[in-house]
Amino acid sequence: MNYESLSKEHFNLLQNLVNTQLNGTVRTIVDKSPGHSGSFVYLIEVVLADKEVSCIAKLTPADFALDDSLQNRVYGSCISSFNEVYRCLQQYQIPLPQLYTLYTPSTNFPFYCQLMEYLPGQDINIALNSTPEEQQSTLQEFLGRTMGIMHNITRSYDGWVDLRIPHLVSWREAFLTTLHQNLEAACQHQAIAVQKTTILQAIARYVVFWTDPSEFVPSHVDGMQGMIVLTSIGWQLTGVVDIEDHYFTDQRFVLAGYELDLETNNNAILSSFWHGYQIQKTVDPTYWQLRPLFQLYYLLSWVSNKPLEQQQIIKELKQRILLRCQV
Image 1 (spheres, one colour):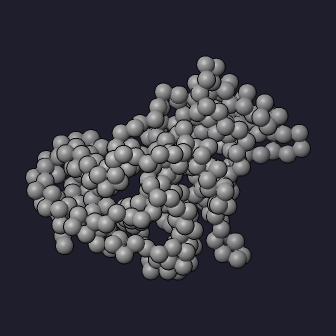
Image 2 (cartoon, helix red, strand yellow; image 1 turned 90 degrees about the vertical axis):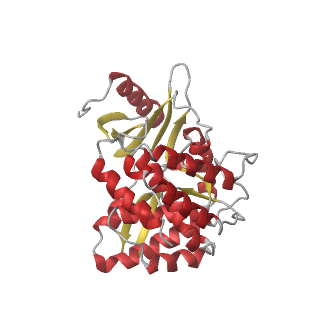
Image 3 (cartoon, one colour; image 1 turned 30 degrees about the horizontal axis):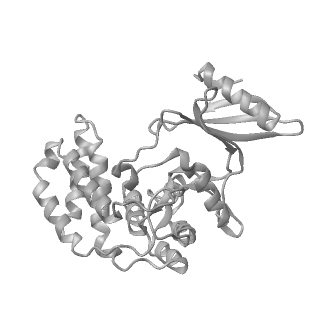
């Protein structure tokens, strides 16, 4: 058995889950935790009476409480929303991993926990970086269509999927307030502080084009997150991952983040993506004017979290920020 550095507490919890929920025994457990989210993710090989299966267990400490700040509303996540997000996406036939069991924290179980099917295929972000250039167009067209299908699920206000009453603070106010908070936080770095006036002037120019969205879409704010496979009939989504990180937000914010994420990974969005997306969903016409504003939000958020010693990364982010400040 391979339990690596698994704590005794986690091992006992996982073993009990497998025994009681799957009527199986643990063969191996491998730590797949991302190291930055506060959650623990384990790949578990399980022996059942007639076969072996792989599953994923995600443990999030109970004290990972709901953050009601404006920052988390605009660019965050909500672990307690997992069940509602799962039901919402399932209702619209979005591919998902099979959910074996779901726990919320209790005295005897101090974690949010999801025990799920281990999805076959390749992570979308890895696929984008490893797919040969001649296949990129087909892949991005598929991802555009898939994201467009998900964005056809809409409601009239932003926020967590299980939010029943709209926020009193508007989406515009939440976005712009936290954008300026991100700028102030980023100014801890001298490279950003000396450009503060330039950035503020750019924000003011872009805000002139702001219109409130008529609807909000459920999405991970970093774009499509899931596992895909290439079959004889083309690419297929085997399931969405990071399910609790999906919430209703501005379509334009998501698309801007997706483009920026591709750029960060030395990739580029192709026309085939937009073709696939717009087969399913119309892009808000103000997107093209407001894209730099939304991308400034991401970049300022990223640089504000960088330690002072990462000067080369800060310098690179500064150049990307200034690029969005140009008309």
